[in-house]
Length: 283
Image (cartoon, rainbow, N blue to C red; front, side, top):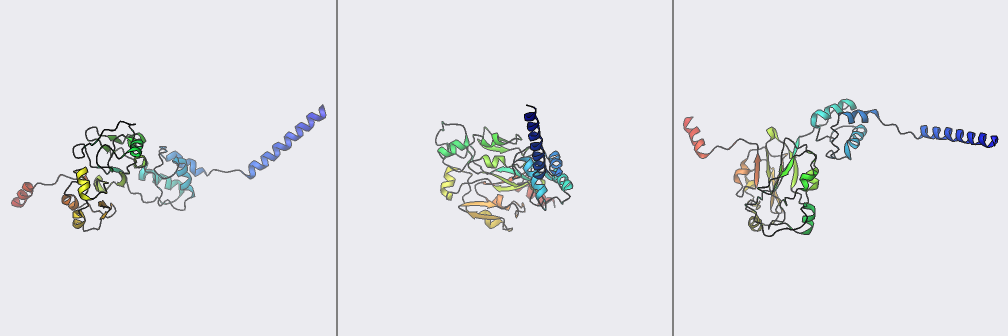
């Protein structure tokens, strides 16, 4: 009996020694900078950085030779400067961005052609049919983007039926972009003084068809293209697009658009013809 107890004890001791040696040999040591980085990150775990949560982003920052191209959209420049300090690297240049909804088809200009009686979910509705209006490209208004946003930055306007972004709450995490089955939400540069110009339409039908479905649709007429001297506008599939890296916010394209499909945000009001004439006389 004593011999069995002794043998059992020796076996346990040997096993413990083996396990200890193996644990040391295969030990995975976490870089302390990962923990330090997690402490300065906002902890939103939104995935806007392109990694699976803040832990994945922190590990990527440690492994990267440079922080160029790495950014935390929620924390912004301030957080990335702290991360750079921890890593002993230079903070990459990050351009503030904000979500924009590229649909201009309010209830007034995009007549309803049928009534949808299914699940009030954009993904489900989009898979079943084109929508309650003749425009199959526009906002469905059921709020998948609202449910995806963790920052209360996007809501459905009950009057227009369209999703709207509250820019001072938007963190550019991109969750709404991924949630929209119609792909009408885009991340764009926030712009100087939060001023932005973009084509608020995704309708790729030919001009006449697009205009019939929505009075505010882009008709691909190229008038904006002809006005732009910065090569910021392109026309493809009957739809204009403004490159925010080239746009100089001159607003000539907005004035030239015959359907109001180009939106300008946070600019001062344009002077009326009477106001311009008055300024000319006074000078």
